[in-house]
Image (cartoon, rainbow, N blue to C red):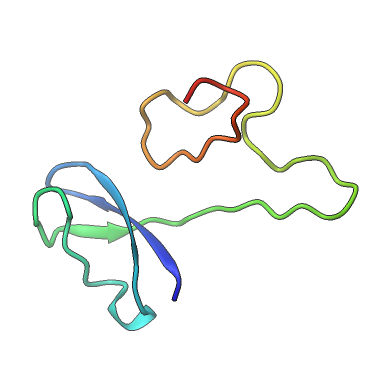
Length: 79
C-alpha cells in the first residue's frame, strides 16, 4: 500500500498514513481528529548509478526551513 502525506486545515499539523488509494482522500487528522485534511503532493528523488545525490540538503546550509514538518533530511544539515 502507498504512503500518503496530509496537512490538516484545522490544526496545521502534517501526518502520513498508509492506506489504499480508494480511502486516500478521506483521512482524519491524527492530532485533532478533524476531517478537514487534504493530501499533499509528495516528492521523491531517484538516483541512477554514478549520478549525484538528489537530496535537497547537500553541501552548506539546508534550503529547507527548520521545523517545516514533513522534511526528510539527508543528514547533511541540522534537521
